[in-house]
Amino acid sequence: MNILVVGPHPDDQEIGMGGTIARLVEQGHNVLLLDVTDGEPTPHGSPEIRAVEAAKAAEILGVRRRQLGFPNRYVESTLELRHAIAAVIREHQAQVLFAPYFEDAHPDHLAVTQAVIGARFAARLVKVDEPWGRTGRPIHPKWLFFYYAMHLRKVHNPTFLVDISGFEERKIASIEAYHSQFVAAEKNRKVLKGIAAMGTYFGSRLGVAAAEPFHSQEPLGLHSLDGLVMEGH
Image 1 (tube, rainbow, N blue to C red):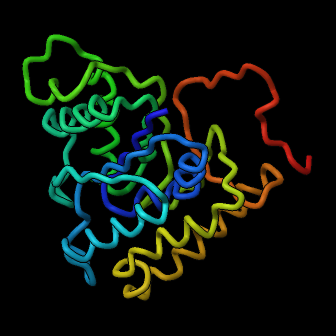
Image 2 (cartoon, rainbow, N blue to C red):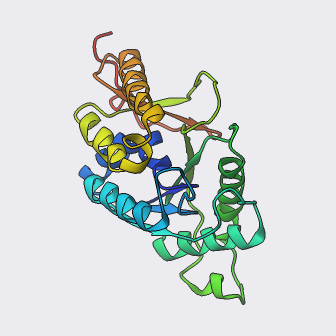
């Protein structure tokens, strides 16, 4: 299955669903990370530093990564951004999309998610006589799921959880690859502890070691109950 994970900045995907990404890769899925911006400027980073860090994180997770090059802090849900994302959807022939949760304090996150919602629809359009529409065949991704990488003190209320037991260390390692953000920036070091604690908490809801939360605006279908994780209950 072809999966596209869109993030406003390098590290958002790793924070929100690094364990799930690693698990999907392990299961044989074709996962592509798409960064809308380079995440700069930051106190200890630079475009060059962030590019190296993002590449290292992708290597840890075993995925490919692309960047659109829109300016950090100035992202808007424009036709240009929508079509740029739609072009990648068509090129990758993405069947599943992931984007940040649609409630957030960071305007870049809100804008990117709104653009992804529009891009999902745009990617299906035919008779598009523009460069973005000629990058691949029209496709309508069957699923759009939202991960949590929020700049908002809000308690997550997910619609489903993914068991990431066995992939927790890989997730943390992919985040630590962003040395300029989570090691050099001392105030951000505690973020890693919070992420690990959250994974443990959501894992406890399933009776497993760790899990990541997601939201779906559309109902999920099951062929049977065999796929449900209910360990320890």
